[in-house]
Image (spheres, rainbow, N blue to C red):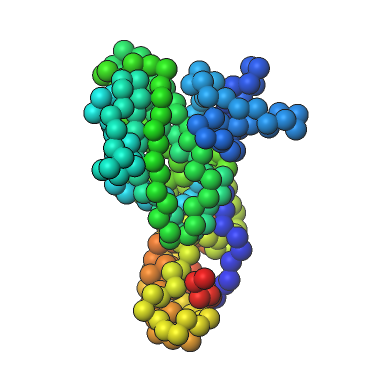
Length: 280
């Protein structure tokens, strides 16, 4: 059995062109993407400065996008409820959604890509900031645009964590699985001999039905196949059965870079402890 180290990191970045140089965007202020140049924060909100690096790697986390709604022009209404609803004139759009992540994320940016049949893409970065693990965060954007929105559609939705694109549920499941397979294969190909490492993790959720709210622990034994998928998880020990169930539910969402021997991925066994602190 092995206990592994911290998760690996992907390499997909969000850039701004600044004086002919490509600078990574790590944060945003409202709808302004921000870089640091010579110790000074510089903001950009013009689409001509933005660029997306096309690679097969993602930041290894899945952000769930629930109830996404995009509306524009005279049909768009704000997210202030029925009593406060107002029509938005042409040249504005509204986007609302609920975001949830399996682990706590910081420096989160939502990037919406608008496109028409005649013009190229227009980028709208929005500062999301912080997403708590397994807690829904409501996003409501009421954005004035510099372009006419007739014939314009929402062509893409990207979520970046510290400048690296994360997987999100708007990407078809088949494509997400293929991306993870490629990420695992790429890491295996770079190793001659290596131990098991986590790639894609999910924090365990404290059982809601458990009372009184006490600190707990569960240890889960499992195998990882040559694709990095979790196989046959079994609780080795638990301070309460509810913690064991929650630990296995979380672990089933994990993905690993498998153990490598002589440049070949091999199946291996592992054991992982989950510690549960009562929610505040």
